Image 1 (cartoon, rainbow, N blue to C red):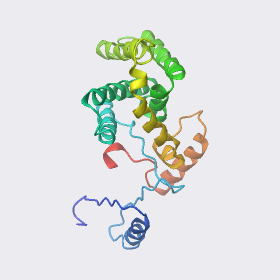
Image 2 (cartoon, helix red, strand yellow):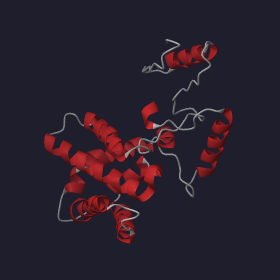
Image 3 (cartoon, rainbow, N blue to C red):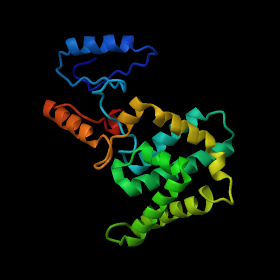
Image 4 (cartoon, helix red, strand yellow):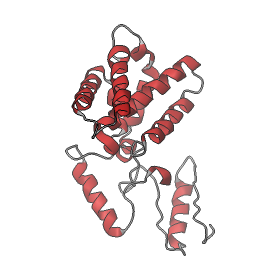
Length: 219
């Protein structure tokens, strides 16, 4: 790596032993004294990476592109539905929780009709209580369209949209069922289980001068 140029290297390999050796070598020969991170979700001190902690458009783009790659062989009709579903679910989650929204919130909205509808109703109340000073009219209209879509299309018994998205629901559930991935992708908010441990880890990293969470443009 050129010492004068801010470049990095990403290594993908199936077993993990090569990555461990590279990480150890870089740590030992770190002549530039730069921070070296190993993003390994199986490690207890792995840094967090919340893909929703980003600008709305970028969060939507990265997550929808990922699921479109997973469903690359699906008919275009289903791909279009996946885009609409993920876009609306991410908008709803970020409306409710801001940058603290996580894929767990998206999963709840997409996979659980009852709890999802409760969150959409909560979102509706927030929008109705907002003013032009807190939320621009154009954003209010955008959020109201999201609410309408969930109430009268996705969760409606008169459509098959929810059932048609069973593939995405299973993929999200499988992703969030992995304890290691769920932990690093979904940092807990205050009041949630695991927040005290997350807070201690955050304070430990800050004290050591290393990041506790990768930002989107660093991952």
